Length: 111
Length: 113
View (cartoon, chains in turn purple, blue):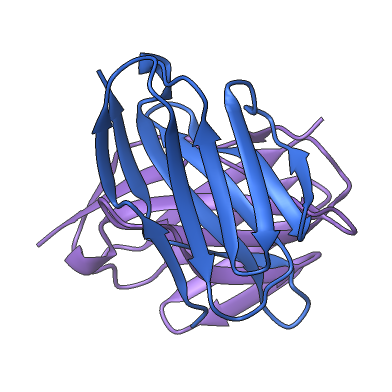
């Protein structure tokens, strides 16, 4: 089974807020975890990529993976209006050729 | 950045007509993918290819066929388009040191009347 659950939102926050985006999954075989950002009428672009458990930080963005809880998170600090987009989580099993995507969460950051 | 182009970028067609979408890449990536994206459904894999003439089905392959006669081109064909195939279609390739992530093209918006 490859289900990935993600709240569709929209999630509305004021500029400067800390944003938490989350996905849960059921397949414990997932080893690779990704976050994609998709602006309106554009293709998804890779934002963060994590292998197995732990944290990864890149500027204002932090990705967390908790494999014991089957839960991944993306935190955005000091959110900006330019962060307004849909955020998709994606996962992959080792040796698999395909990704399993969540349905995406729409984020709206107001000035 | 990997170079992916999709053509056409927009298309309007009528029910029952054949439609072919093209994905072109310039960096000899082995794996190429076709997705469709619809409100409420997210990204869904249609077909993918792991080499010239090597393809496999995704979760929503019914009504679609693909061909890959050369490394750089991956074609998606709707043999007889239906209104339910109105969607945004994205092509993707594997990327990264371990080829574990995917890089997406700009998309093709298809409207079937």
